[in-house]
Image (cartoon, rainbow, N blue to C red; front, top):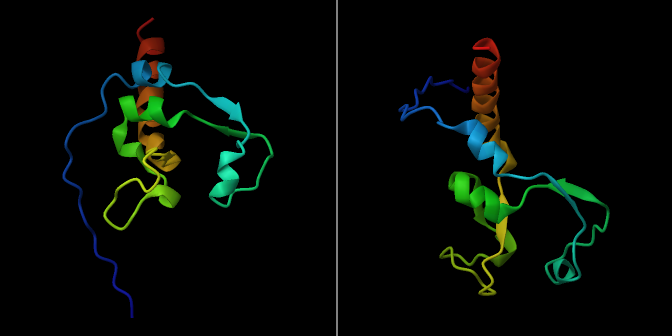
Length: 108
């Protein structure tokens, strides 16, 4: 038997200046480099993404150390501090950006 427990989040505040934050990001096409093979990645198809370092500057909650480069204590194994983006954590920023854009449109 499963029970669903309703949990409320402690709301801190809405994301401010979402449009400005989004404008600091760029969507890119990329293909993996040869170094990725050392970590078990062999997909040379064109990919789409964002630059983790750019995201880290504006939304650090959406970036973490790459799983292949993190030891049990959360330290970089290689010393290179490879990063991974949690794309799903960018969605709230996009939602706020859309709302800001609508306010801009409505105010004209």
